[in-house]
Length: 174
Length: 137
Image (cartoon, helix red, strand yellow):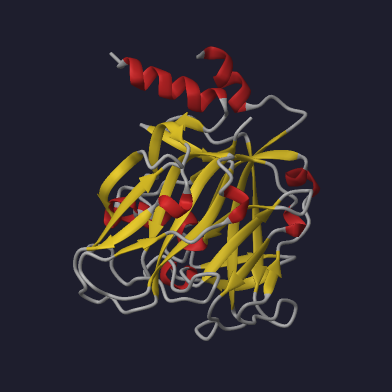
């Protein structure tokens, strides 16, 4: 039996689309954004490392973001990103991901370590926000431990705006 | 169990200018969120394990066990009194963000960090928080 406070809180957070029970699935769709460091993406301390364009993500509500470290996947390979080794969780402590919306406003500053599920009790960080992916960027405060054979993998969980939203459905039930 | 969904976040620093037990330090002002225009519904703190350097290039405190945090609104009403800094570190607390039931009207410059133990702390290190907020409608 929930207390009145608990019920009110659930309703308040849910009405704003700012909270969900943990057992709720993140979304139906997800995308892996992989970027290998190297000549195409030179690593410099303090330099903005922009994320690639993805029109579907730009037209969607972001429901979750996860940063994959080398305990979940040692190496990554695909035809566009190439093959590279993932960073350790500790190396992610040098980076901050800036989420930017279509008005070029930074809507979230996220230390990458906080997005690594393996060091956050396997909890994927949930969102309810819109972004312009190609305007989002990462800034590293130290890159001395990275090599050109390293890279970063971000998982974006999203709901297309023209589809049904998990938040909308949830909100109508409470 | 409930999970926050992030709408907006902002990293906020609290610089420990001198390392003395009992000393309190104010959060740095961030004008965009200091006009009584946000509802704070979650909070996360960091040590150097989670974030080595702040965006303003300060070193983050190495441990959080010697710090307490107070959160107040513009009227100096206390919402959170002396919570251990460690309790706000997500990765040390089951991956949970510290969250508020209804959201609070926080006034950044009225919020403080207090030193209770100086072990491993050095002057001019920063206690860093990620405020999870939404603009008031």
